[in-house]
Image 1: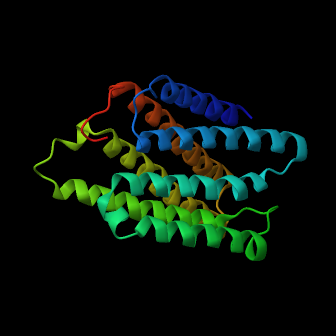
Image 2: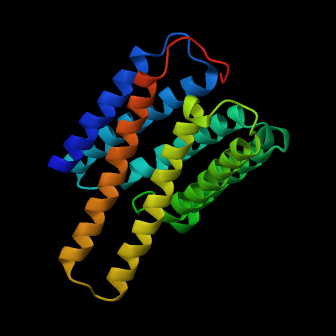
Length: 216
C-alpha cells in the first residue's frame, strides 16, 4: 500500500512539473506529458481496482497498448531514421495487433499480459538505441547533454532495460525456489526503477527552458 502511494505521489509530482513547463513545448515533449498522464491515470486505476475488486490486471491490458503507441509516436517524432524507414509505423501496427490477439487468445484480461509487456519493452529498447546511435553519429551537433530528448531517451531505456533484467532475476529466483525475501527484494528493485524513471522525467522538464530549443 505504502509503495503504491509513493509511486502515485512521484507520478503526480512529475505530471505537475510537465504541466507547469508545458507552454511553448514541441509536439514530442507534449507526447511525453501525455505519457506521464496516462501512466498516472493507469496507476490510480490499478490502485482503485486492487482495493475494490482485488484484481487490477485489466488495467495493464488497457493502458499498456496506449502507452506503447504513445512511446512509438514520440520516438518517430524525434528520429529521422525511425520516421523515414517507417519503423515506428510498422511497430505500432504490429504492437496493437499483438496486444489484441494476446488479450483475446493467450492471456485473457483477468490475467497478467506479460507477453505484450515484454514485446513492447523490446520495441521501446530498439527505438531508444536507434536514437542514441543517431546522437553518436552526429558529432558536429551540440552536446547531447543539452538536448531534453537525449535524457528522456536515456530514462525510457533505463526503465525498460532495468525492468527486463529484474524480471529475469525474479523468474530465476522463482524457478530455483529462492528465499521469498530475495524475491521481495527484487520487486522492490523493480519499484525503485519506476520511481527513479518517473521522477527523472519531471526533473528534465524543470531543468530545460520552456522556450523551444533548436532540438525541438
